[in-house]
Image (cartoon, rainbow, N blue to C red; front, side, top):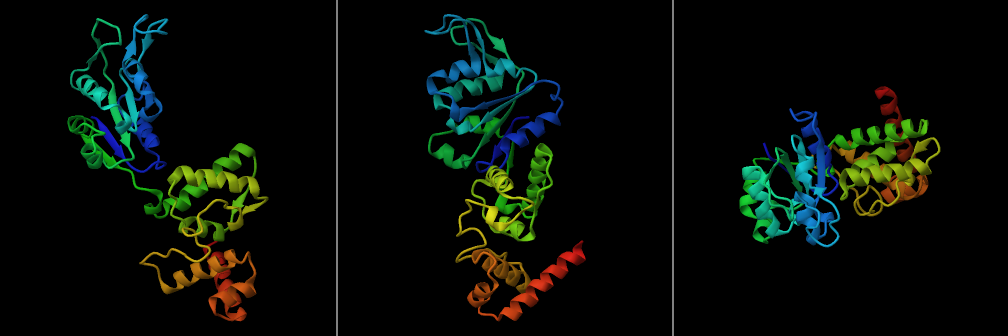
Length: 288
């Protein structure tokens, strides 16, 4: 059935679409992706449905559109709300009847393509603002899936960090690690760019690191969101000990490892700071 993926940019909507295709009965056929935001308005119909030779100036040969190429497989329409509204009516007809015509053509063609659409907008707001036809929405959203942003995916952040780092090590025949302090900084950041931003940040840190990624290698993170500077983020369900640990590590990161300055900023003695750090080291040893 038709699926609508709803989520912020960078959450991995196309990866979800590819997974749906690969686990479906259409896996042997093609997965064809069309980014609706990247196609000029005047070329949209030709790209979607194809055109015949001579249909317009510059049409020197016949052209298969996305629907023809996706026949028997899956057509992924990314950023569906960027499709011109007047073309959405034609798309609806194809979805209802399976019929379409190339631009300049006189013969009806048929396509058995399963549609997976995606948007980073709230569908109801898109309908209200005239960016999405309501009848098309009901047709493509037979099974809507909300893809959560990275900041709401808990331990996925730690898991994805390890996954991307393993990929980078495999590609470069290296064994770069990552410190617990760096992981905590990653976990405390809000990731407005979601998975795509995490991957980019890790690749940059990987280049900067020698043997292990440290907090200082994580360039470009907004200090108001990361566990540095004036603010840290602590879950409402965190224990006092967990919150204290985040605060201490954030202070050390802010003062680039200067323990005396970190202790002064926290209002604790240097001895207390060392005691806490020894406790954290013992925790890691016990986990290992």
